Length: 332
Image 1 (cartoon, rainbow, N blue to C red):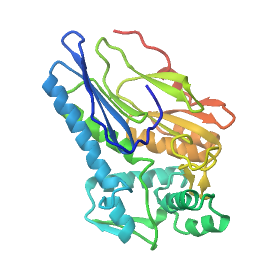
Image 2 (cartoon, rainbow, N blue to C red):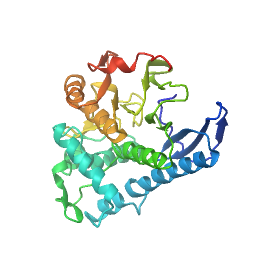
Image 3 (cartoon, one colour):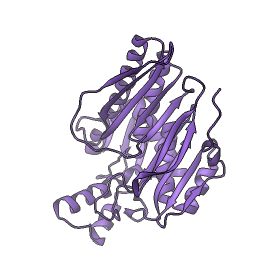
C-alpha cells in the first residue's frame, strides 16, 4: 500500500473489483478526490450493499471537500477567507474548526489553521517569481497568523483581523475519512478500509480474522518500507516534507511552523495511529512542527495515540506503545 500522495489533476474512471472469498466478497473502488487517490474497500455478501456503501463513502468525502477546500471558490472555507466571516456555517465546518482550535491549544500553537497567508506567499514567490520569500515578506505575512484570530461566536465564524485566512489541509482529510467510515457503517458493513493517499481508517477485521496491513513507505526511497502496521478499528495518518514542497531539496514545504513562518525542518515524517482519522491527521501535523522531543511528548499525552517519527538525520523514534501494532497477529 503506497503512502505517497498523488496530485494528479485529471479525473479517471473508477474501477470496481470483486474478488471471491467464500460467501463474503471483497469490493474495492478507487477515485481521485481532494488532490489524491482515494480507495474504499469493503467486504460483504451482497454486491448491492457493497455498491451502496462505497457510493455513500465517496459522497460524504465529496461533500466535505465541497465545504472545506480552499481551491473551490464557493466552499464555506473560501467564503470565510474572502469575507472574514461566515454566518450559519455547516455543523461539519464548525466541528472541524473547533477541533483545530483544540489542537492549537494542546500543541502550544504548533497546529494552526491560519498559516494560509504563509502558504500563499510561498506559492507566489516560488511559482511566479522563481525564488523563496524574503525575510520582510515572511514578517509581513506573519502579522496575519495566529489561531486566536479565529472566533466561533454563536451561529457565526469570524476573524479578528482583516486578511486572516485559514487552511484545513492538516485536518480536513482525516475528517472526510471519518465521515466515509460512518457512512459505510450505516450501510451495515462490518469490515472495510478507507485509504486517502496514505491516510487510512479501518473497520473491524478482514475475513478470516486478519488485521489490516498498512505499510509505511520510506519517505526518501519509494521502494523501501520503514515498517508494517497491523490495525483494526483504528486510523493511521502521516505528515511528511515529501508530500507537497516548493523546491527540489524540500527545504520549503507545506508544513509551516506558525511561530517562524518557515517550513518545519527537524523531521521528515510523522506517522500517528489513533481511534479517529481527524485526530491522527492533526496530531501528525502537530508533532511534525514541534519536532522529535516535543512532538513525541504530545503523542504520549494523548490517550489511544501512538506515533513513529523520522528525523532529518534518519533516526526513527517510536512512542512507548507503537511496537504493538508492528507485531503480526495470529489469524483467528
